Length: 202
Image (cartoon, rainbow, N blue to C red; front, side):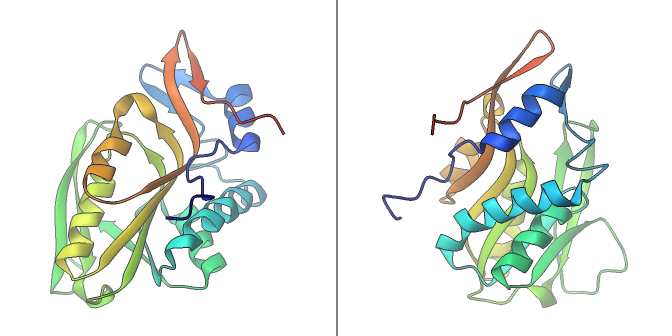
């Protein structure tokens, strides 16, 4: 990896916006008013372009994500890098066989989801990068990595808009041999506030 590549440099516009507008509900950081429920196109384009710049180092030829909230950043990253995007669907009988699937637990919703990818859309030897909105415990990303590898793909990296450092997902994903890039790192949640890693002074 290039010694000049900083995959986890805090992206100041995102850090400042989370500090100003984010709300905390228990262990949940809510920024869904601009990131993953109500989406602001100009801002999500800016964030995804920054993520694409970092992930371009891996020279992927496929972006892989999970529905639903990963689709917006992943699509723009794919567009920026001029490669296709595939998203794992929540369990659907309409996905044609052969299908790859994994059952994962959602800590946000408190239930299990089955992620499914048609085996037609990941080819042996493809250079794959995972993109999603949040990295918490890493279970969704790990399921995507596992399915991609089962299909014969090479998972070269993973990029996330926001990382919850206290959930240790980065360590989990990197233990699978996949480098991680994030734009904002939440160190912990304290009295209803998100404490983030600060950008370096310019």
